[in-house]
Length: 226
Image (cartoon, rainbow, N blue to C red):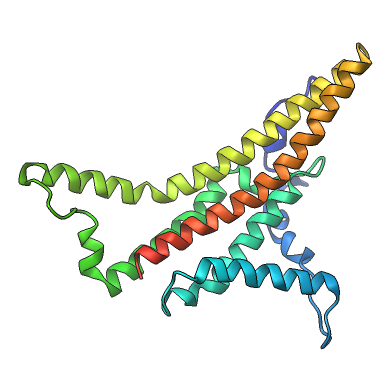
């Protein structure tokens, strides 16, 4: 109970050196690969899920947008595995760090926007001024649309950070309450422990959903600019 509530969000170190890079590189090692002609059930299921996700995200894109399919599939797998590993006890979740989420969101958003200005400059500029806008409102709308465009990567990063952090904090609080009640009232402990199990199942779903939402929004930004 004396443990700092935010201790699990502190970037870990090994011998005084930051270990976040090693943790970020660890999830790809868990993805099984096959060197055989006939795959086993695990790899077959994995490939089916990847094809299904890729098909759903790429269905609305043209040929130029579909060149991003490998990057988007890699992104959703990385975020999902990182979020799920963060649910393990005494682990660290890199996606709770706003700096890391910004490092993912800003380059992808910037690449999509730059592609839009290079390929469809008229359509890209048309987003800043909706058709039929009254003349006195033109300067204000241009400023508002510019701010809304620049805030998109921040919204991506903050959404992922807030959802993952909130879930971890809630699990920490309920887990601490379960431990404290175990010596006071057993029936209450069992009820709280049941809530903790249900919350853990919910957090697993949230970890996967947030990975899909993050990647889907990047895909939508790409679709608007291709």
